[in-house]
Length: 112
Length: 111
Image (cartoon, rainbow over all chains, first blue to last red; front, side, top):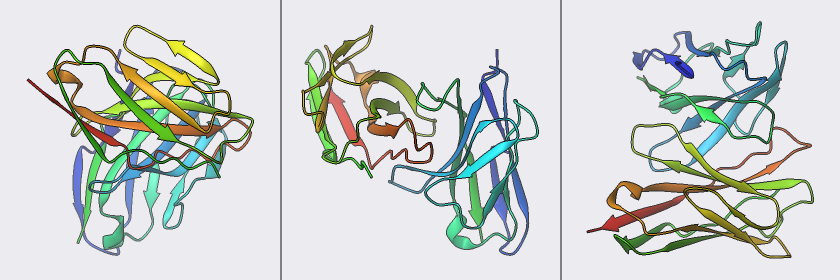
């Protein structure tokens, strides 16, 4: 049982490049989330999806887009990366909005 | 918006009970209170969730007073492996995007 997988594990990206962070869950959870965590700080919600086909904006959505074509996958895209998007990105899922969230291992992204 | 305030850090010794308090003065009627644990280089892990009074599971207890403006996570007999960051999260069931993790409390358990 994998739970939630994220890819890549880490990435160094030139500013202005497009990047998609992948997230897949095998728990058939309805809700999925993307967070970013900057050094020494807590997690901030970027985007969420409470069911396949729907998405919503979190606390810090600017510069990011998401899609939810099916239950299992929730990719996060940076259309044109900027250095301020250097962070660790965590994907999570839960059965419903207020239920326990299960987190992936994270993607460490560095934008130069 | 129900944001949270926690101590930045706490020290404890193995075998002690640790209580971490979180303030959430603007908590709304539909908000749940949830605590997560995070080790370095890992994603957070759910510990416990509650709405009011007391909740207990195999790893922790959560105490919520009647006014729900604060909550206390209680870890019985901590060990070195409990050294981690603990986040208090207040979630609004009706406004899905209003989950705030805050900065967390860094618990350092000493031998």
